[in-house]
Image (tube, rainbow, N blue to C red; front, side, top):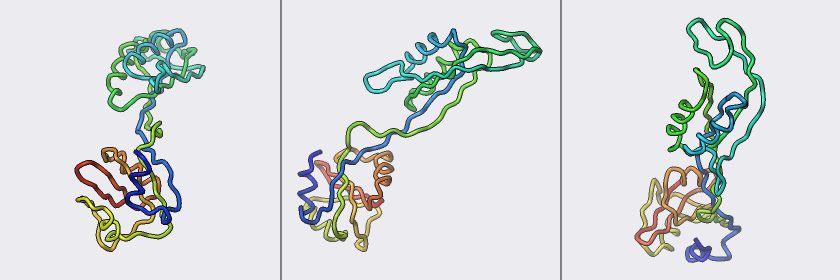
Length: 207
């Protein structure tokens, strides 16, 4: 998207500043504890399932060495150690990120390739900023009324939860399909509204 698109709506002298607008991506981080000598095998298996991919890099992980303890019960079938005796195992805390849609496939691979009878793992949600901007965030010197904005948009516009009483000073402009993720990312900028430019119709979302 080019800044000229925004300049078709807003006059140069009424724009205080312009900054890139980035969407934020929801990601998952898998943390698993694995015996030291099984770390490479498990890392490769998880990577094939979709974990540890960051941009043009694969098998990305972070590893921390430590000692795990466990006491197998009478009905346990321990990979190492003896029943009713406290065991100490040199382990690696393996961390790899992944996308939501790959998570079940990755967990299936984890449970299949991990040597322990009871696999200890944790899953966390986190957020990353997209590498490429999805539009612009326009800061105006003065608030612009809804009616004035509609007047400047000489094409049909679809408004979501917007009325003639609304005023806007900070506006996100995008040509990207507006998803829940885009709307939530726009809210993080502290903007008043999100304006979508498309070939067929413009859309205005109050934030």
